[in-house]
Image (cartoon, rainbow, N blue to C red; front, side, top):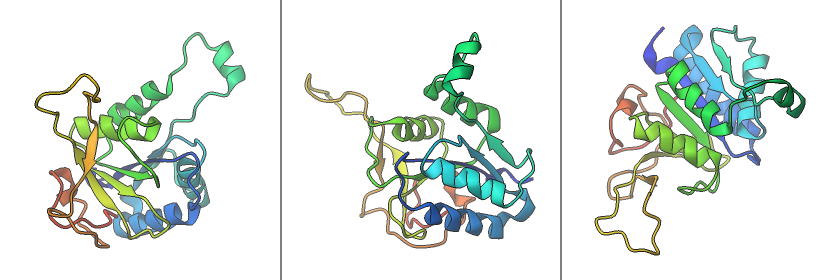
Length: 192
């Protein structure tokens, strides 16, 4: 199995385009074949679409790494449950993805669990591809945001990431995922 075939899928709980997730994962399956491993949380929205894709394609357990949240009844019964942040961290550290694909139409630093997962991935050097629309070929690489030189009292002192800017990136449709391991590439394109 190649390292580039391990993809963590995350996104908005209100993601309105499950067919976009399906199209991106179909493209990844075409490229990686039986080496493709999908890591997801079976939450709602984009993660649910990824979960359904894995079930529809009969992925065996070693190719479908699912980290669902515990239902409330099971949470009470267990002595310890993972918070959403802990679960995301475990998906990254335990499964070793080589790429994160985030499906989110309004992703902003510091705003929600998808942003936190992206920030965590970027902080350890994982490439993150953001798909913000229904078009599966439309997306952009995220990169860590530089810390402000002299933060003011009213500013958020912990910027999480920034979109690669237009001066260094353009939008296209089919990248080489092996290039994704480095910093934002000059030309951005769908990583699958």
